[in-house]
Length: 518
Image (cartoon, rainbow, N blue to C red; front, top):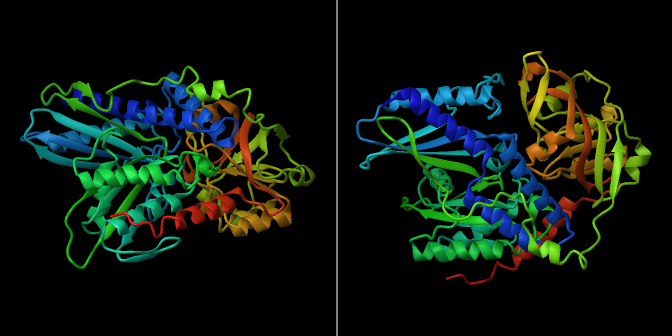
């Protein structure tokens, strides 16, 4: 094989997967946008998502700033040199990271050190399989941490919140899958896709679940029982009312794929791999001798470029639709009085400074002074993709929000300690933070998860950076923004949209408890 050409092909696969959403996924998102009721915050979120997809196309930049853990599944003819192929893939990963197509995401689990090039023990994941065909089938999925954290595994029989007992049968499996969608809420950047693995052991069950994510959204399961279950789940999960970003709405799930394998008598696992709307997986057929790409996978059917409005329903209903929500402009530093005037559902646009802070920063601030004055300021739960130019200036290549619930142990205390008035993230936070918002005079703003290009465009300059020893995603970036849009989902009066949606979706989930499936 021409290994240099193969490396180039793998680089192309990585770049396309990170920046160019597959045709089948685009069609699913278009259908969701057309279903959504005009004038709602879910409709606004889907409009932002489609705009972000178009911007990623135009900029050839990451759709989402969390480019995840690259996972390759590669089938090779007998005799292919998998050792050399693995080296080429790692070289391609490092180059794509250097070029800003991937965020450096490989972290030493003991020291916390970021390798800076996405290489390290266990990263990237590369799984080889031999087959009898005469070409190489190479597929890649970039699955971010927000949706990865919402994966879930059930051991049957089990007692499930809202659904009661799930037994070792198709009805029990049905309950597990519905519960998996409920428990994700908006934290996995819904509306999402799920892969389900029935059987196996704990590790092979998860492998089977993730394997389903390599299927086409449009395919038909050859197993009639599983085909019927996939159809049932897709229809009924969308009755839970969780909606895009967990704001409520018509679409909570965009796809469901289920696989099955044998198990031992004592164990019955149902494993669910949750994937966000930014469903980044592509594949290529590669010539085994030249190393050149012969064909791209997941490219059947119409491609939606999102250059034009995707929802005719939106246009037709514009006159009758509810008025667009009033937008409130906030300029940092923000006063407590301004914050107390905000309520759940308000749409705000932020101008001025904001400071990024994720897991490492929050732990640091709990034990140390802040490197900057945060009184009246905005903390953004974000791990951006950054590139430095020849003059040494930093530029933001992608900057969407990360899942906020990870900061729940720290957030309220840090807000009170440093006088922070607003926190931006996705998926909402818990009771401890809500109580602190009410006591201190703070607000939680939900940005649109995965909209990394949309928000990068709102960042007008990088004014500085602190704590780079934590690595690019975890450093504290000082960002000057303009027109940064988000929705108030937790206010200073004790109200939480996330709590309300979770409660209402649990009530709807309970309606499925006694339904006989088969």
